[in-house]
Image (cartoon, chains in turn purple, blue):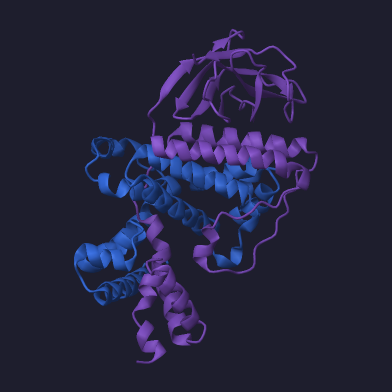
Length: 240
Length: 188
């Protein structure tokens, strides 16, 4: 059996990412030497690329956009606070399709990387828990000292999310920050820094270990956050 | 500058530099297709939302890695969604319970309330579905199991109790036929 005969039927499985890892490596080695199979892969990929638009079109819930934009705006503020919001645009060299998905690294200014890495890792952990736990969990109302503001803490397993409405825009150079308190200890900073959207709503993933946490606080801090609170909390949620 | 007037390919460099408004515009254009694909794959709204969120945050954080040579922004986004949905299926073992999940059944009954109003996107989906509907059932099944289910051809062969060669052949023939039908229509 020739190499071509061995791989003759693999093009469909390949473009559907249905080959095993070992087979994929072997087939890609064959593709490098076989123009006929490369042409077939290019042809079948057109059909495979149409598959993702075939599901009945649905609209995502507005709350999903609110959650995503809260995270994006928080990270954009972090980048801006580093004074150099210029993630370099540099397309990667051409690679095989499945490798795109490998969770590429960030091209960020060095000073931002540390802060952002913490936030992103925490956000990733929070997301993982959300996926595993689904929407199960409990909701705790924040006590607010701002008459127009209301907020809830949605707790899912080891993670929590602040969902707020009616928040004023923080003063220039300031952001909102989430803190955790444990009995007998000073408030612990988290990497959850956020600014509300134009309609006053906001969503922020609370990072850090929630074990033994007595309350979750939100106050106003300089953009970039602080290690100890510099203002009185305006939102307080009691966990225990 | 009104970012809404820009093409997708011009928004990505802005987004990669941390422009949240550029990202928001990309989201508004493609969130419907992304969510629809995620829901089709994972079968529950809550997980579909999680998958869509993870995919778009990944997009926001790795926008610098878009390469227009590889295809359109939408193809790129839907590729990320597809990959994340497969991760979610494997992580949460949604495979085994999605068809019998009460929530799923209830959600499917409610689905008409959430249908996309964008005529162009509805038409495009219909064209692709028509191309899929023309396929013999055994070819369509292996393609759907591979793409929407994330199964390898070895797993599909076990599932269907069919030889691996048969499964591979059905995938190849089915996609070839789909390609021919799409070439006669406007999509592809």
